[in-house]
Length: 253
Image 1 (cartoon, rainbow, N blue to C red):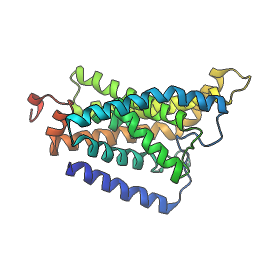
Image 2: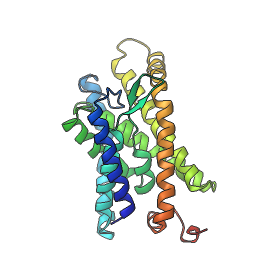
Image 3: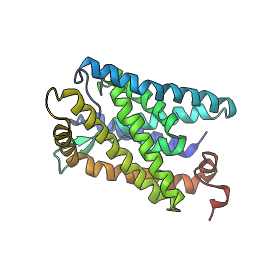
Image 4: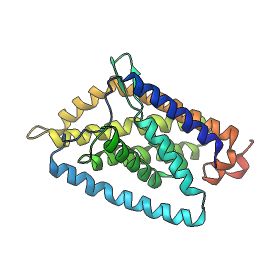
């Protein structure tokens, strides 16, 4: 078992409990229960379902080849769960908001597995923490799981192909995964509540409303992602090789 990731998970667990004890009011990325009309709720379930199904397929395939993979997925699920329900104060906005965490899971385990991780985290939050909801679970999976995971993964892999160093690629991927998630949430909200209004003006207003919180939160998530990449490179570069993030010749270079 990866002791480094266990340490990270334990630290994040402590942080989230401290924040919950503080009981600060948070503006979450999750779309709350009852916000979306039923036809849009069903639509986002239908759109997200193939991604979740493929994630389950990939999990089964990889787990047959590597018995240590499922425990690692479970650990990353706990990390994403904690990160995405941890309220972070944003003084310039006078409120708090949440990072997403799917940039990290998308980089480490791939976007299809990251969608599955986000789905489990969001389901637990909807059931036990009143973050999001069951009717809006499909929409939240698509914005945080699909958009966040794939955007972070694509940015990271593209920068690494251009020989950008590991921490900087992680930093950019964390930022884009966070901001893309909120852009997706804005689009889902605008489509669901616009009625007879035009989509793009409402989408722009919702997106702009997120800027005071998510501009700094995206930067924070970038720093967190870069920090995890650096930590794993120093402590467990063999895991990065195993996850095909590094080539064997890059270790120690």
